[in-house]
Length: 381
Image (cartoon, rainbow, N blue to C red; front, side, top):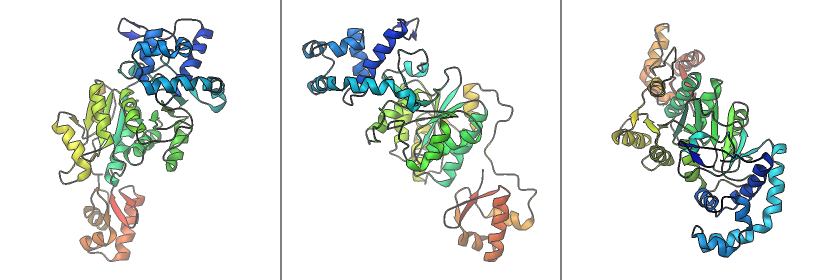
C-alpha cells in the first residue's frame, strides 16, 4: 500500500503472503471499535497486519494510535481470529469478496480519500476506474416528482455509459438504481449494513438485480445490521466512488447534504436540482446551489461536465401533446408534475367523474400521466 508517483500501489509480495495478510486484516476489520484510519495508521507503523496481531498491548499502547477502550477490545478480540479466518476462507461459497487496499482491483477513487476503507465486502462487481461515475442521493421521503427526476437522470446517465452509485435507501436512492437498471447500465449500492442484508427489505428486487448489473458494497462485516451511526460513515464512500454527486430533493437537515459536503471535501463536483422555494424538500438543494453547487436542470449538465459524448441529451420538459385529442389535452393541461387528487382534476377540467377517469386512463396508457396512490395523478416526464 505504498504511494509512488501519486498513485497507491497494491501488494507486491507473494500471493500466499498477501492472503495471510488479508486474513489478519479481515480479523481487524471485524472489530467494530477500530475504524479505517486507526487500522491504516497501525499498518503504517508496524508494516504488517500479522505483526499487529502478534504485538503485545504495551507495544500497541506505545504507538499512541489507540485509546484504552480500543486497546482492551483488541486484546480480547484475539480469541476470535480462528473464527474470522474460517469465515474469510468461506466467502467464495457465499458469492462475496473481501477487497482491500492490498488488492490491485481496489477502487482507485477510494484510494484518493483520506479515510478510505481498509476492507470492502462486495457482491457482484466493483465500479470501473476508467468509466465515469455519478452518485445520486436525496430524500428518503421524496415526492413523486423527485422520484421521477432521479429515475430519469439515472436512466439517461446510464445510457451515456456513466456508472450510477447510491445507497439503496427509500426514495431518491431506490429510484436512481431503478433508472440505471432500466437502461441496462451499471449501478452500485453502498450499504450501511452487511452485504448479506437487504435494507430496506422492500428493495430486494433492486438488491438482487444489482448483483448482475453492478454491485453491492459495504465496509461493514456480514451480519452487521443497519445501525444509525453507520449511514454517515457509508455516505463518504458513496461520494468517494463518484466523480460527481447529484442531490435530488433534500430537506434543510438531510443525510444527502452530508454526502454532498463529504464529496466537496474529497474534491468531487456537486450538482443539485433546483426546486420551489416554498417546498421543504427543495431547501437543501436550493441552499447547495446558493453556496456554489452546480445547478442541474437536465442530465446533459452532468454529461457535459463529465465530457461524455451522448448523441441525444435529454432536456426535461413536458411531453409533446400535439397528437392528443381535445379532451385529453384539456385534462392534461389541468395536471402538474406534482400529483393532484382526482377530485381536484375533475373540478379543474369540467368533465364528469367517469369521463375524466377514462381520459386519465388513456393518458396513463399513452405514457403521458403517472398514477400514485389513492387517485393522485401527475404529468410524466
